[in-house]
Image 1 (tube, helix red, strand yellow):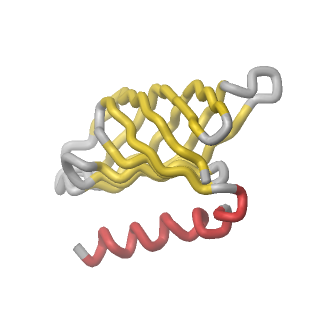
Image 2 (cartoon, rainbow, N blue to C red):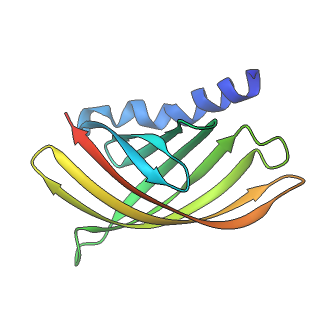
Image 3 (spheres, helix red, strand yellow):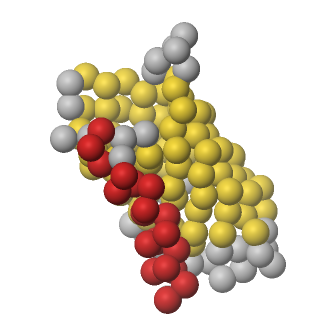
Length: 128
């Protein structure tokens, strides 16, 4: 448990520096149901059915501003594969404070039961 709390603390450091660019809170459905938090260009997902913490950095394209890519990591309570690396491709539509998003997330987990998976998420965030 101490390792998990330490990982959460380390992964949240970049998020605090981006807070001046806006904060969003919402929910996502998909492979893992989670509370979806946005801080600037950082995305944070905290699982609601099981412990999983995802932190991703979003990168946008200038040609298609609704299209984004991401790179990040994952920590979970799975003792056989507790850590993973993630990439993602998504579409986002934002109207005033409300953002709808959908993304496909290939990820690789490491450990005894390490694996390659392709997850997905559909969600909504409210920006403040």
